[in-house]
Image 1 (cartoon, rainbow, N blue to C red):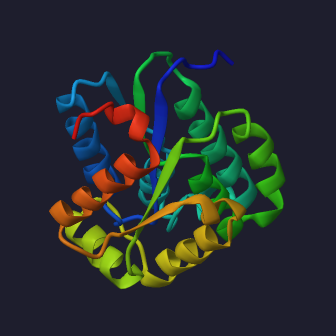
Image 2: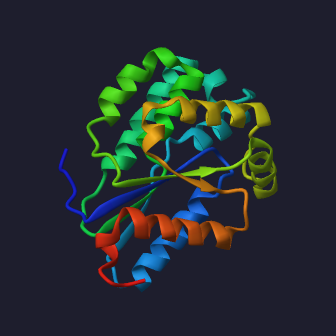
Length: 204
């Protein structure tokens, strides 16, 4: 795998409905306005596409369609591809990262976590991981309003617990994502200023 040359990688992670994509795009815009070369990357696992396909075939989700082991293998391989495709410099804003797949694997098929870690562990870890911490009930309502897919509260709660059980969780910057999006964005900017001051180089 060709390693990317870049100043830093900032990953935004958390359960569905936490607001990762919105905040990742806003963070990219802010850093771009400061004069940095910034790239945004959606590090998806394909779970939504697989889930929609499953429902069209009369199955509730990708796990029911493929079985837990095959579903996790497919998601992990897609996540790996999205993490490694393309090269470039500057700052990478990653909308999701490897830890998202570790949490997902713990929920669906824990015995595959060592395999997922061996594969995704080839990717350099982020310089800063922001965990958007949102109540599962709030996240559920956001997903429902979005109208693209469905996420039961208990599934969201299970994912939140899985994230918190990861050894990497201790290194995450926790961001209260229950608030207004603008407030969340300001907190994220503060976290970047604190964790990666070299990026700002006197710029605010």
